[in-house]
Length: 197
Image (cartoon, rainbow, N blue to C red; front, side):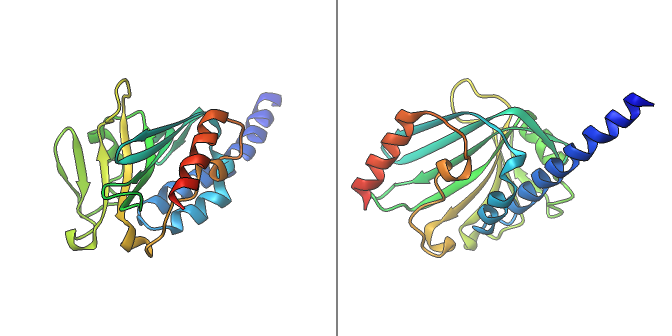
């Protein structure tokens, strides 16, 4: 009797976090900035463990690892990733954001089939949802991880700046995740942003 009551008590606290995680992931599928509003309301469902920021000649990549991983929609979410493309100078040209999961790209696409009834096309490297016509410059892709040492799959939206209302930047992960993390990374973000303004 006591263990059954304890189980119900734990489930009562776990259910809101699970529902919040589901709302965030479902908001991702629209591939618009409404995702960040939902994420801001439900961020407690995700606990950051580690944040990495990498700068390349044509991109800034931010990766947040979760601890513990989050279970939602039949997938195990291990992290969040966003990238700003700077292909033609300092002004951003494209934005990518989404989650990292433990499953393979094919396994993740299979778990999401009810959200993408149009299906996916591609191969073992990338499965592109047929939901968005090519002329929209917007896509949802299930990728094989592109960074060395990473496994699983990335669920990612990719949108040109013009298709997000010509914005300059995605919300900073510092604001999205309210935990302490890599101070050096934060400092470099501020320096680079200052130079770009």
